[in-house]
Image (cartoon, rainbow, N blue to C red; front, side, top):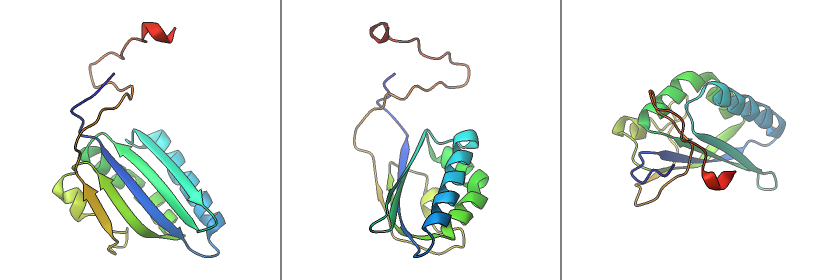
Length: 144
């Protein structure tokens, strides 16, 4: 399924892991991702770590701003636990989130961090998605 007029929003969060907190960070991020997989609205979550530089990169793809609001409401305790072990180095938003989402880009304790918002120019995705009342797309004949 191709979606050419997508309202998707991609977050890229670069975090500096606090010295001596690598194991705690790994455990907290693993719990957070597990919770998001089971209960979150994200279409995709991926976390990568550069142990040599003590940097972690998290990518999260959302259908829209409502999905981000839902994630923040559900995941606050998990986000707080992760933030005990790192600081936000830089945060990038790709897409066009609602103004209240941009205004709320702060740590759980209300501290600001550097971020950049890049509006969508063009693109598509092939994520298999269904909407309420819609049947899943049939498998492609070429897939079999």
